[in-house]
Image 1 (spheres, rainbow, N blue to C red):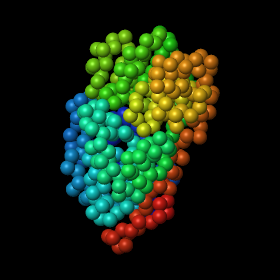
Image 2 (image 1 turned 90 degrees about the vertical axis):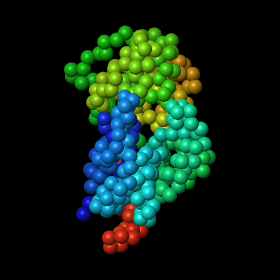
Image 3 (image 1 turned 180 degrees about the vertical axis):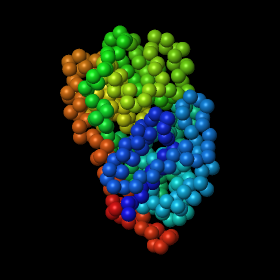
Image 4 (image 1 turned 30 degrees about the horizontal axis):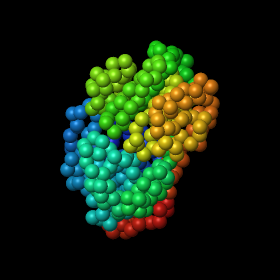
Length: 354
């Protein structure tokens, strides 16, 4: 009988975000490894959709539904991807039944809530610490995040890498692919159009050529009005992104709140260097694939020099060891596996003891 892994996520399609991409690739890779993967996402629960253009749906009052669903599934492992309403519902279920579970920390919510709502980081840190304190393993993507959480009183922290699909993201244009119809150099940004992403720091730079921004969110109208010379394309299907990654000269990522930034690996895989901030030095570890500086303009000019020198091969070779298969394997090792005694009273097996 296949072992059942439940992945609980408050983010799901059509929302475009790192956790959504992560969930999609985990389902594929874990299924290939022989697991029965069961995602629990907001579209399966009663809830509301936010009317802010962000494609965010909240599963409100989900505990009783969660309880019924998990009782029927009887999972062998439960991993909670996000600290939203579904995450809390799954956490409460596990605690009440003494079922072990694992969590991941994918967004710096203290900085996010401070930027978007003006809330003190102290309150968010306290809430996040309460959320993760019973987790058998809090999975993080970088040593930077690990150190940050340790400073904030978190424990049971372990590494969990990310990957990139090199069949979709690579430097090789499709047979019918045409160059982007914009004046060069072309600067590309991809992500949700929300305050915590700081897109204004990119769009206000005095760069030559054309700035392209792909994504949707509550700030889309404001950014269109504030930066009329920029090309805002809205949300695009993931399979359309490689053309823009390949067609761009530099990928610009101004966000100070992401914990990793999957789009960085995607654009590097397509042969285009990154211009971003020093906090992503664990994602962009080679000077051949990007430039990181607190001065975003300097990062952009430096990355443009890499592109003009011909960095496509260096970029693609850089991502070859960063696979979704490795990401899924790490998750399996980190999971807290459940052993049922009859129908109830589960006990925890050692991590990775599938």
